[in-house]
Length: 70
Image (cartoon, rainbow, N blue to C red; front, side, top):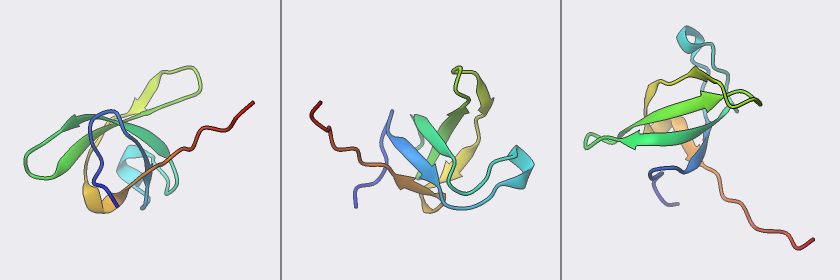
C-alpha cells in the first residue's frame, strides 16, 4: 500500500488516550515530516478540530474511496 501523503484521509490503528482518540477515528494528513511522521487533524462533524497529534505511519492506514455512480 502507498504511504500516506498530504491531505490523505487516514484511519487510526491504535487508541491514543492522551489525545482522547480511539482506534478507527478518521483524520486528515495536514503536514508531513522528513522523519516519516505526520501531523493529523481530527475534526468533528461541524469541522471543528478536536485533536492534532504528530503520528508515525505505523499508527495510520490510508483510506481509499471509490466513486459510486448516482
